[in-house]
Length: 173
Image (cartoon, rainbow, N blue to C red; front, side):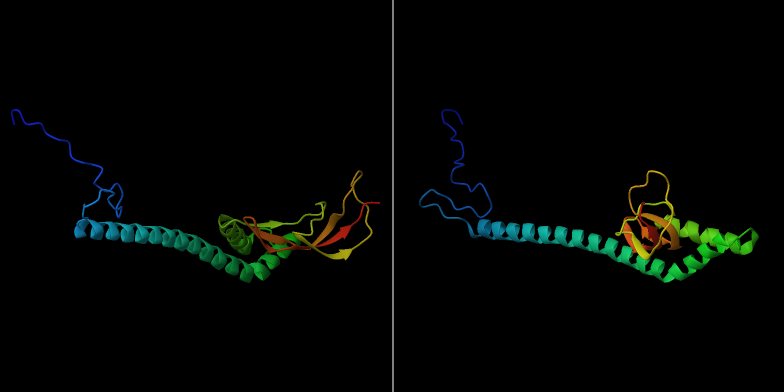
């Protein structure tokens, strides 16, 4: 090693990226290098496709879950209406059925189901369905069309409207 100068390897001849062609004339790229570059590109493409597939499956799984829960809630709407009417008429004062109704409502609340629509709410056509327009005295200072009677409560599941509240409304005088 004495007296011999070691030359640094020529990095300009080595491709920087897989599949890059050497710019030095007379250099030949080894077939294994080309094969490795092609396989690397294929692997990167497959990996990107897999990541996109995984994201799509996760998104679709959540959507299917939400649709399934929503369809069960929609099927239970007549039962929820009967429970609500029974509460309004005092039929659920104590007793075993009151406990069952409470458990049903608590279970649905865990899934984000909530009842809405109260007399005095401002009428919003995106969440209320006005079945009647009546003359009624509204609170002093009311400036918007207002719900005066809830004929059938509405239900939401998170931000999704399951059923609009069916109401009677009145305009301010």
